[in-house]
Length: 428
Image (cartoon, rainbow, N blue to C red):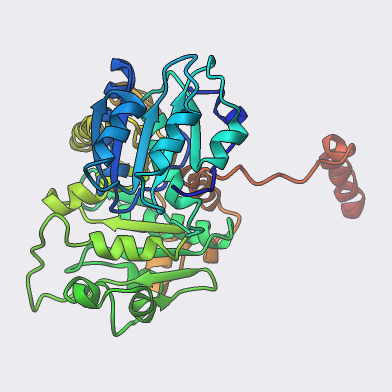
């Protein structure tokens, strides 16, 4: 058993899952849980279906530490063992016996209770990596397993944000690129944009890039994927923002299996704090997998009936597929287009059953100029309200606190009056 502990017992007193917590996915590991209660066994089985443990193999057994010792007398130990203790039972002797049949690299998580008599320090000495006070829920089990690898290996596990349109042509790519720009420039997070629309992607145009290589080289050469190879494929858009561009050519078709992009995502997660996926509006096995596997999802919609129906359907499916995650977010784009009948934001939100995180006004001149110049909105209109919206969306998607506004002076309320008085004297 390993001799490291991930956190102390005081940290575990609050067992309520927090939907806003970022939990990095676990690698391909084997996990075996030995439970003493049906509720903990149910939580562990639920955890095995969570997207963050999609690569892990989690099996659930009853019998607690005694069953674990008996099992490992005959079978090799997995990467992670989860042990539930019985209240009032001193498990130190059991851990000592387990150590005699346990491989040195195995990590151990103990689910205890308030009546446990074993001091936490003694548990650490016996190689316990994490101690959780029960009763536990699904998210507690997921967090405990994932934290063993995201923290103990000191690997920068990237947060993956997927942006997709509820309908074609709603401007999802434009929003994805501008939000990624705000994440990199204003939040100072090293970020990568992945343009997944291989045939018609516009990221290279929006960022004014002409890379020779891109995502096609990665997806068609899975055997070559490693961090150094991925670095060579990235185009540098700014000091903190890179692009894995789409070829945007029609000389071949791009039919992929469900897991075609998994290796690309996993490789970039190891080196990049934030990854923004520009997901095309199509419903295939791999787009569905990319959305479900993302840490945060943003659906972009226009205020019309088809967008409302599609957004509702997507929200419903993604919520059902990600029961332990916070629900997807959505924003409305091109709001207030002249002479176009629209569904009011209030009515749209009532159908979706949640408010949009932004309602971006229609501005053909602003967005058209940015697109034709290969610039971001912030580059041509730094103080525009849409630029501020993109920053707020970036903060919301990354879980970063809002940037602090400068403190106002005591004279702020009367400054407009003083300015008017000065203007009047100048004219006289």
